[in-house]
Image (tube, rainbow, N blue to C red; front, side, top):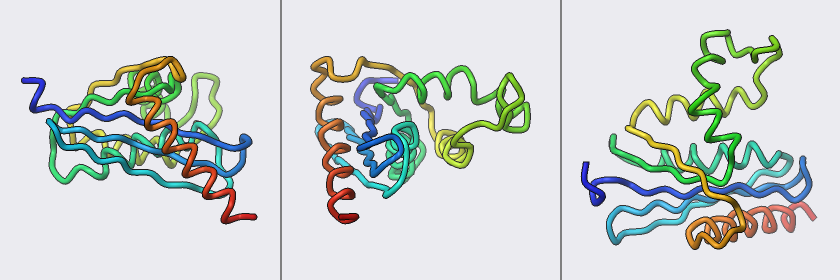
Length: 151
């Protein structure tokens, strides 16, 4: 698969307090075309916002395609690459038989991923990666706007 046939996605989540007002953002890039999407929730957690960035990006794609998702969340990356299949097989229970946290979003992400050919990549947050910094700013702005709406 050629580099030009892949949708590059960069995602991030932010939370002002944990829980608290939160925001998520995703940058979608296909060739020279780019689109940034974002959203917010009133009372949420950072992990939920990290998941929402990936979910929203995949749900925004109108047809099945190859996707490379870069996230600064080990929770999201490891969840998709290491934990999801086991959770599903165990009836959404963890290895120590506790309910999976954020099951609703993991299920939604699993459905969104199934439509595409997805590769997962991790980058350290706040390390100068330009696209990660860009979605970090957008997610934080969404969280701040949510906080203002609540005030």
